[in-house]
Image 1: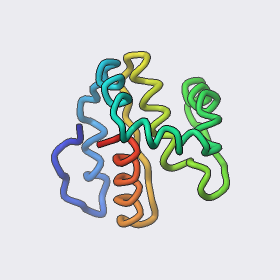
Image 2 (image 1 turned 180 degrees about the horizontal axis):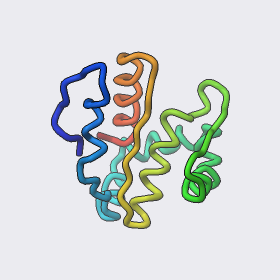
Image 3 (image 1 turned 90 degrees about the horizontal axis):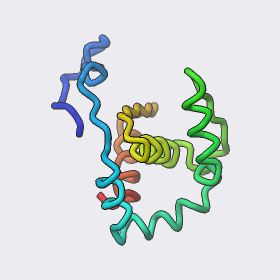
Image 4 (image 1 turned 60 degrees about the vertical axis):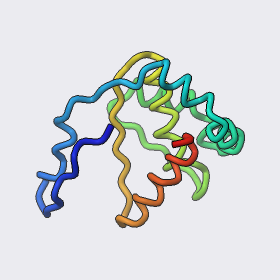
Length: 122
């Protein structure tokens, strides 16, 4: 659940969401989400992407290290798959998870968010 909209400024005040409570996605919610036809359809497509195929290794690296860099070719799933894999791994463990993905332009960020929502059946 996203916090209320924050007015955008040139200062770091727009990062108030980092201070907000970060609830965990429940295993039941994850299971319910994974059961939707939309999710299952996109799961098949997602499974072909290199980032998805390396998901366990990427999640383990993120858990072990304070900073993790993932390098991959354009279109390999870095932006759309890794956040989903990390969210799912945290939900399975019952851990809270806060993911922040940056994009060079607002339109790119919105497009990525919309794509991930569609892939998750939301």
